[in-house]
Image (cartoon, rainbow over all chains, first blue to last red; front, side, top):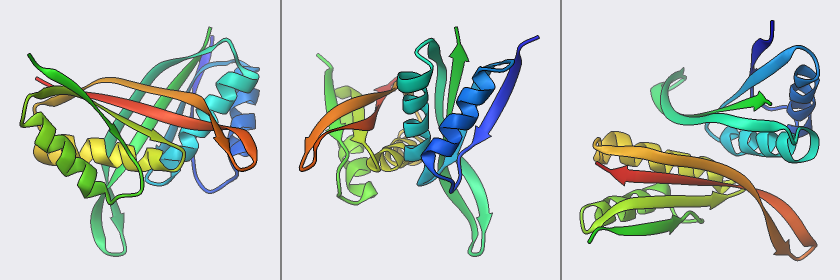
Amino acid sequence: MAEESIVYVGKKPTMNYVLAIVTQFNSNVDKITIKARGKSISKAVDIAEITKNRFMPNAKYANIKIETEKVEGERGISNVSSIEITMKKE
Amino acid sequence: MAEESIVYVGKKPTMNYVLAIVTQFNSNVDKITIKARGKSISKAVDIAEITKNRFMPNAKYANIKIETEKVEGERGISNVSSIEITMKKE
């Protein structure tokens, strides 16, 4: 059975996430969703594009979704944009 | 005839772009594509979400595309991620 996986983008270097995704695609995972919020959204797009163009030419974007999430921080609840990029190995 | 329009996201404040888009939707434009590169990608997602959630509840995302563009800079040609968010007024 093929598996699905979620990768949350945070403060690590871009290539850490790329390598994690490539490693998963090369094992039993055929569908990975990259999730990011706020300023990490640009990094999520970099991660997806580098994965696809340099390492996984047979991966396709199955879905790209943007939305607004409510996040509780020090100054109360605020709205933060988020992205979900779902990649599938063909 | 309804018109299409493109908004390029740069260094101006987020709300400038939101207001430009809302103004266009309220005139003769029914399809707007928001384009951004690199670190502006996060801002493009903010602009789209604020437009949709606060000002244009009847707007839908028609398409979200991410890709890599070659950009010529001071240090030669480099790869930059980009996003295109197409919104349609229903």
